[in-house]
Image 1 (cartoon, rainbow, N blue to C red):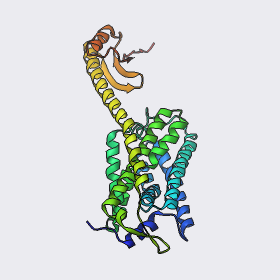
Image 2: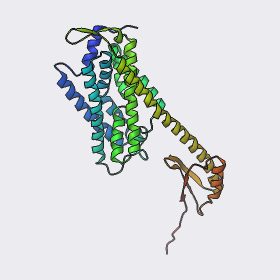
Image 3: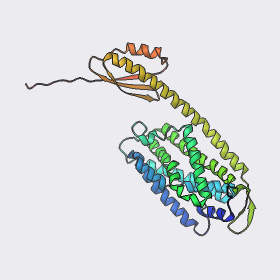
Image 4: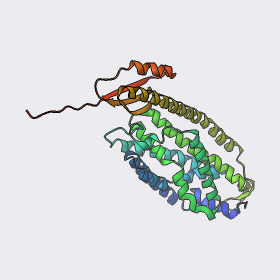
Length: 329
């Protein structure tokens, strides 16, 4: 595997660091694209449009300061490390604020109950961390090797940065702090994964074993131990809520499947149909439709108990389906 050269390091500095004579131009570009991507992502989430959200992912510039943070750690460049980390934090806050303001313009709450874009981002799982690690690795390789930089648009789509932040703002405006917390966890997971895999990739390519050129022509040895430890520790801490979320979802799916099976057997005997079975924070909601009279719930209650669901709250929503003919008088 080829190691990076001094020219490669200088190229990466130029791509990721906000320094030098064109620092102001880079900053203005970053903030312009960030605000526009926040508007696009928020609009896409509100409209429940996957295509619009993908467009926001391509425009979003947050990947630059995140990878800049990685390079700052590897090069032991404290000024650029803090500058890039500050841009990540301030940029995230700006996206949340933009989404919150756009949420004020919507008539109805934007929550997971009726919006697939929100629902897809409020319950992150361990598999999301795995995907983020792989995507972060691709982005870091594309950074160190200019011959595969054409993969970056795919990386921008695969790694979800601005859309979760948009969901945070919209959920907060919709008075759904739990969903906002889940979306923020997804964002932090993705950022941590990029930082961790970036360190690994740069170690593989030998950046941490080089004497790295500074912009003024001087050189110094690379150090990254303490910051790398913090990043890895953060990644391990994030695994705890992701694991709990994964186990909770797995339990909900299992419970929902059992309720669905029992409810359908009961509904078939009563001549009714199960329209939907949905897990909720307070239990499981079952919607059934059929002709009057309403079926007796005693048999269903007994069957649910026999299936081991005595501790599960099951709400039955009966929707009578009958026809009334009005003849001419």
